[in-house]
Amino acid sequence: MKQLFLCLLLGISPCLYAVNNLRLPGVRCMGMGECGVVQSALFNPAVVALDSYKSFDINYFNYYGLKELGTVGMSFSYPNNLLSAGVNISSFGYDRYRESMFRVFLGKSLTEKWTVGISIQ
Image 1 (cartoon, helix red, strand yellow):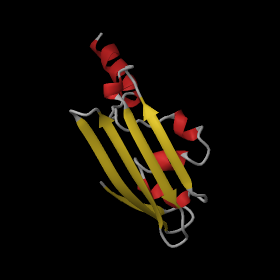
Image 2 (tube, helix red, strand yellow; image 1 turned 180 degrees about the vertical axis):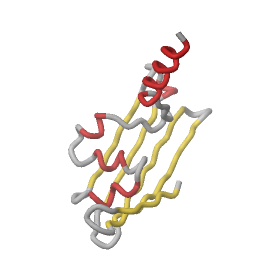
Image 3 (cartoon, one colour; image 1 turned 120 degrees about the horizontal axis):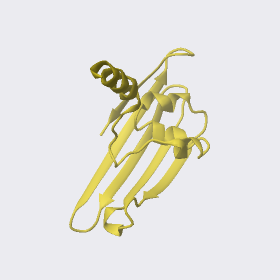
């Protein structure tokens, strides 16, 4: 019984993960046509070097149906052969409690398969 439980636990554990509610990745980013790179750059800033078009994204999340818990975000990425760059601004909360984030990210293609990136928050 212990071996069965251990095998089950080891089989399930690669499927489990945690993420911050302020910045959720997902299929929505892929379905936005070229703007997905802007959202993906929050998690991996090297991705901005792979995009070939400028991207601008405005989004609003309201997970619980309360305007006090809404998240507003705006992102812009500018691809360039020398150094691709982007900016992200997010705000969560309401008048008495507000959490805001400003992030600048840079990406550079080293070769066809290797890109490097950095973000400052």
